[in-house]
Amino acid sequence: MKKKVMLIDDDINHLITTKEILEDEGFEVNIHQSPFGSTNAIREYKPHLILLDINMPGLSGDKLAKLLKENELIRNIPIIFYSSNDEDSLRKAVKDYSAQDYICKGDIFKLRRKIIDFFKENKF
Image (cartoon, rainbow, N blue to C red; front, side, top):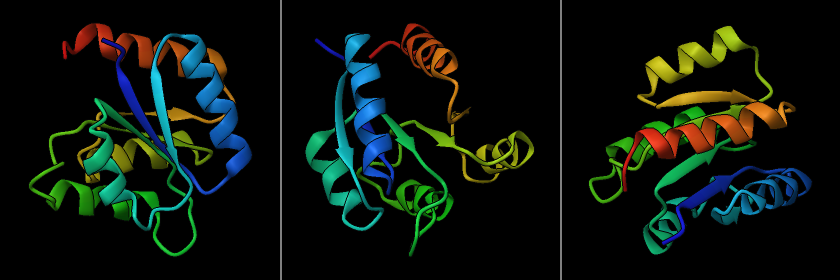
């Protein structure tokens, strides 16, 4: 069974590129271009991991992470922030919003490595 990743980001080009990278590694990836409606999309897709951008208009990814952690049906799905923010602010967001980790955008090697390592360490 393929490991399922839900990618939430407002940038369609970034969504498509990241989806292709992760699919090349053997993951099943579902994309959602807005924080709005993502809770329903997550409930329907039932991902093993949520890869979440922080900088999105209307509802930032860190605030969305807080809402997801408050939702009884999906609170246990791990979240990794995937953002262009600086590493200090990402480390703080991981701690403040109970995410598993963060990945800086633009580093494809780290993206692949962290997602592969995450699934090696966490049996689903």
